[in-house]
Image (cartoon, rainbow, N blue to C red; front, side, top):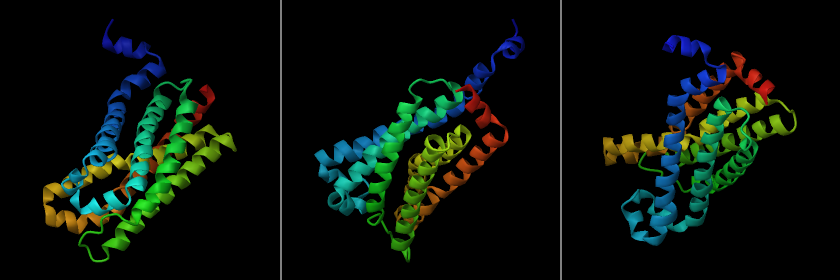
Amino acid sequence: MSRTAAGAGATPRARIRHAGSAPTWLIIAPSILVAVVFGSIHLIVIPLFPVVAQYYFAQQSTTFSEESVALSLHIFFGSIAIVTGAINVVTAASDRRLRHHRAIGWTYAGSVAISAAFGIVVAFHAYAGTLPGGRAVVTSGFLTLAACWIGTLVLAVHAMAVRRSMPAHRFWMTVNFSLTFAAAVLRVWVGALLVAGTGAFDLLYPTLGWVGWVPNLIVGAVIARRLHATGRLRRASKTE
């Protein structure tokens, strides 16, 4: 049988799963990498070997020592959120009958709520750099991120628990996960600034309070709107 014939005879679900394999790993792999690597650094390495904080993002060494509890809880639950969120976003598109989707979803929701709450505390101690007004820029950016993170989560949960609207739930959960995934994108921006040099890093880091997540929010909203416009969200709700 030719590939064309095989493709034509494949079920819609099989075609979705095959077509989504590359995007799937572009979501799953960075999510796991961020959770494991940065979770290990902040939750295991630095607590056991505090001297590491002087070499790993030394500008934040004060925050590591003075706000270690809030930072650790923010990172711990954020790590759970990005992994469980990636699993649910991917499986929602490939296997709409996943039995554990709801349990994973509630784990994700709880993790986002807790991580965002402690993120508010950490935002006031984020590295302000040498940018004029850097403290206001970085703190306001991360505070707004926390507010949007919690806000879109509330809308997603309300859509499912109160309105019983799967399309609306998927719409807001897609937008919400785009903010969760900012944890991975932010590391890319940090790496780019480190490559640019210490001067550029110290000057521009505060802008990551906004740049690190606003593009994600825009992309997430665009993807959610397109899924809704094409009817995929509505069709998904009918199969569950």
